[in-house]
Length: 190
Image 1 (cartoon, one colour):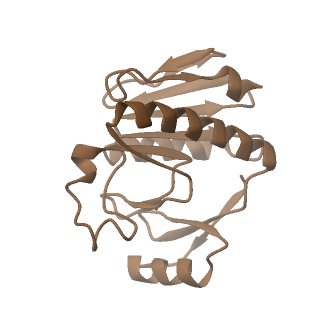
Image 2 (spheres, rainbow, N blue to C red):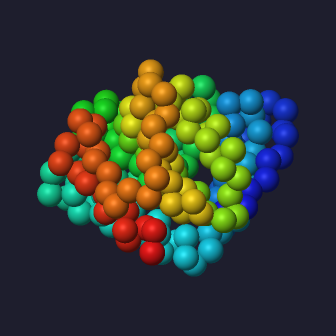
């Protein structure tokens, strides 16, 4: 997905929300520095892959009943003040239930997902996505996967660990964050 960043000095969360409401067809994110990232719609093939990711995670979660799955249109307010929309995210019930129903759950919720996935396609900057993954970790994401469809590579990000890189794996485990979840990557590499 192509994106560009507008430097808007001191863009507040309230300003960001107003911009989002006035431009409902755009996918927007706010950086911790108050910059506005504008992302174009994904190509059809990327949307197909995103659906495969969401579907597998949703199916596991439907059976495990351990949390909530979110798609790429869901924005979260992270501790650094940024508002991000991972391609796929998951939050445990324990953490989600700490939010107030009306005030916090019905906005760009002030919560860091426990787990996220970002999908790198041919139109994305890999360096920007890798930087974004580090931002997620800095804000408390416990496990994050960057799926590089261009090079059939998976980058695994964990708290206080070096990035692990796997070349063309057929599947990947959700470890102790998503117990019992195994993502079939063959559906993503196709």
